[in-house]
Amino acid sequence: MQTRVRKVAHVLERLGLAMAGAASGLFVAALVGTSHSALTNQAFLLLMMIGGAVGFYLGIDTPPRPLTASNGRPTDGGWDGKIDTPDLLSAIGTFLAAFSAFASVGLIVLRHDPHLAWILMIMAGWVVGVAMQIIAGTIARLRR
Image 1 (cartoon, rainbow, N blue to C red):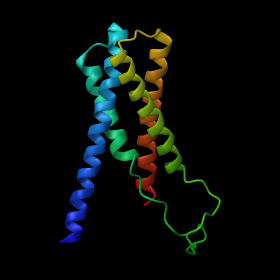
Image 2: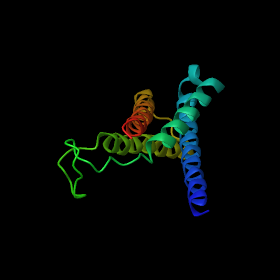
Image 3: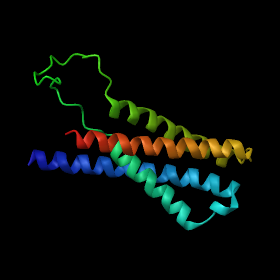
């Protein structure tokens, strides 16, 4: 019974992360859409929301690296000097996506009209961040 409850709780947590990613994508899309008229359509909004949902669902809660060394012997749990690539990609991707969403919300709420270069940087940060999250989540799940 307890494992079923834990699984349901884990799924709810990941669905919540996906909804937060979708909302973040919506904020970035709203800012970009108001600044660039060619991107003011529902397909763009939906694409950004789906990208955010998938990125946050896969990339924030990556499975840990196995506790065995490359030679097959178990490690003592300490740091073996190797960088966990999915963890690093996930961390940087989450930061970029969250910062882009934060900047978008701030600009929308404060009603600023930033230069197109700033809008493009926010959009690039979002796209690169979400892509890093998706790649990190995929790598972590494939190595399991």
